[in-house]
Amino acid sequence: MKITKAVIPAAGLGTRVLPATKNMPKEMFPIVDKPTIQYIVEEAVAAGITDILIITNRGKGLIEDHFDASPELEAQLEKSGKTEFLETVREISNLANITFIRQKEMKGLGHAVLKAKSFVGNEPFAVMYGDGVIVSKTPAIKQLIDCYGEYGEGVVGVKLVPEQDIHKYGSLKVENLHDNVFKCTDMKEKPQTKDEVLSLYSILDRCVLPAEIFEILERTKPGAGGEIQLTDAMREIAVTKGMTAVEFEGKRYDMGNKFGILQAQIEVGLEHPETKDQLREYIKEIAKTL
Ligand code: UTP
Image (cartoon, rainbow, N blue to C red; front, side):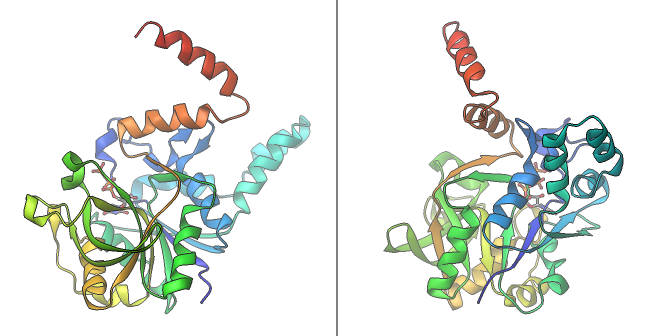
């Protein structure tokens, strides 16, 4: 079945990057010259997604404005003959069918995804976290969608995380199927003891889920941090039917984390045609003083 819908949860408070997120959604933080959320929407579109639901909250109107038309700006750019910028601005509002829904209370990622129930209907769909940018040759979500096509079961995008950090993530019980593809039969969100750690493979920012996740989420009780955890709902599918885990190719930047933001600026800046030469020289210079 073709996957055409994506849900982007973007209602988190971004407390790890306060005070920047006091009034500014972290999803609008730029990497060089493009907001985080636009990278994610472009990844979805490149993977064949046509309909996107972004889950926001009261403080995130800027995200809605970014994907809307900008008649005044467009008129001004047209008048001044800045056609290149005009194209760039117009393309943003025509990327996909983008709709928004608000999560009224911040009860966790699982609670946010449940808001997508009527948008999704009865089809498998993609989930792409609004603060996780993945730069890759093949769009990361496409790598997961291809795996859904191969095995027909829910897919999670995974990477190995450092042992000292696994307690901040979800830990997965996995068995290699081939290459970078694994069978996942159990998961534990934010393991607190060594016994709870199933492996150092963790879900990072991307999943493809069957619609049955909604019925499970409706009865999922708050878990780690008192929040309704998507991992707890996915676990039910993993232990009963199994899920597939793909160690996706690509570099992931956590834009909800101070160091992730810095890494993204430097690494994307070193590839950007307008900044790469100057930035390389600058880094070489500054490295001499370290
Ligand atoms: P995170 O835990 O990374 O985001 O959630 P956060 O809640 O903003 O983090 P803090 O405050 O710095 O600790 C993963 C994803 O789930 C979304 C976030 O926006 C992010 O994309 N999320 C989280 C929601 O949409 N709603 C929630 O209630 C919680």
